[in-house]
Image 1: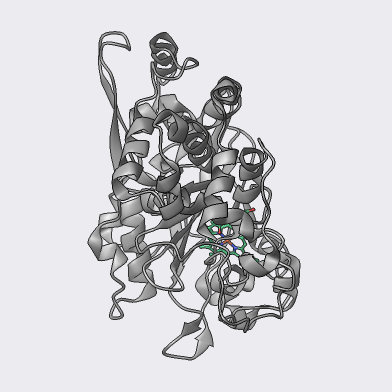
Image 2 (image 1 turned 90 degrees about the horizontal axis):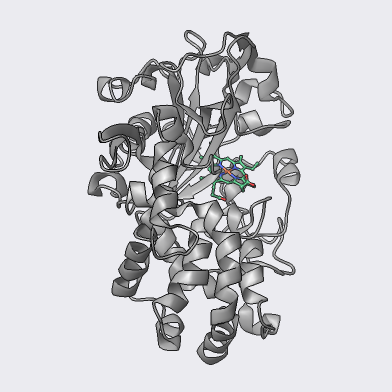
Amino acid sequence: MARPLAKRFWRALPSASLIGALLISSVEAASPGARALYGSSRSNPAFLVAPDPNKSSRTIGWELGQEYFRPVPLTIPSAIVSGESTTRLIPEFLTWYSFPEVLRLLQLGSPLLRFTREDYRTGLSQAKLDQLLTWNDHLIGVLPSWSTSRYRQYLSQLDSLERVIGSNDFTRVLMNRTAVEHLLRQWLFSDHCLDRNGDDLDDVFWTPSQPCLTGEFPIGSAIAKLNWTPIQEYAPFVGYRTMESEFRASSLPNNAEWDSFSVQVAAPRADQIIVGSWLPGNRLGLTGVHFMLKNQKDWTWSSFWWSPENHSSLNQDQPVTFTRLFPQAPNYSQCTVTADQDSAHSQPTWCSNPYLEKGPGNIRTNCIGCHQFAGAHTSQSKILEQNHTRLIRQNFPSDYVWSYSDGSFSWVRQLLPVFELHPIERYPSTTVR
Ligand code: HEC
């Protein structure tokens, strides 16, 4: 199977003449200017990736938040902006990679760095991955569309913290370096995640387990999904009551929705919510962030959301180290699950984000119940109708990651134009399985 795959990849690489055309489409989305400022995203600290059964899931959640929200200093070079260098602090996870950036690496980085067929046949070595990601940090002056003068102009626009946060482009899904390395190692295989006949909601014991990826994400991979909400100074803002006692799954009807827990509040101030902006007058507040961290087979799931004061019991137990991390921290609540079942009470666990989990039944979920079906043929509404909170599958076609094959931002669908630059050999489904 290795030979035809290598052949297919090679045929999918852009020819030199196509690279110019691809520059236009791929560069903008992934912002080489922002990456030059951020530098390479770093890996997880060891304590996060070693699961500790003695810690409660809430403790794990705050520790994870402490790492991922940790303000990292970005220095805007002195020679460029009015003679003074400025340092701005932004949450670490905002420096992670978006899928368009991964796409640019595949489209442009690989051919320009002259990676060989063998590199892709066996999977990129760590040295090649490092080379590719370092190349990505230094695109100013390399890509024709990002000249030094354009970069200078870009930096001059970063004249406030809100603008620096906006440099992240409000991307919905972000991946840390370990997760990106996994994608780059085996992107060529990812179209196996489409056309998976028969692998549906009921096909939970499909054996032998055959992932559509070449393997699970490595330990230390982390992925975030974000929600930004427009803030208008005098317009009311939607907050949610998240008093734990009110909405534990057992006490809610099957079709309950977050909407019935909404409250209108005054627009939050910049010291109450993380704010980003890019276009003048367009300010967005970070109302929700999901994190999934691969530190065990079924991942650890943690979700943070903005809470108006006194409307949540899920920010009351913040350790002071989190509360003092950044000015808006006291307004963020979280829930975290490490398994589908609460070991002390053998009840299903609960974790749901009011800004991200919309629709009937979504308030009662626990992340794992839905994400276990990622990569299978099914719909979220069917999963929610059947009220899945238990881990029932034994096979995980895309290792719990929905974006591979599904959703409006499917990575495989974005990769298809790369595959389809030239006709691609498709494999009979029997060899794919
Ligand atoms: C009812 C199904 C459902 C539930 C429940 C759910 N998600 Fe997701 N999630 C999705 C889908 C579908 C996507 C694909 C991206 C998109 O289109 O939004 C996704 C995307 C994600 C991503 C980006 C990586 C990926 O898988 O694509 C993360 C991280 C994530 N969810 C975390 C969580 C966390 C944490 C929870 C629990 C608090 C949760 N999700 C609950 C359906 C669900």
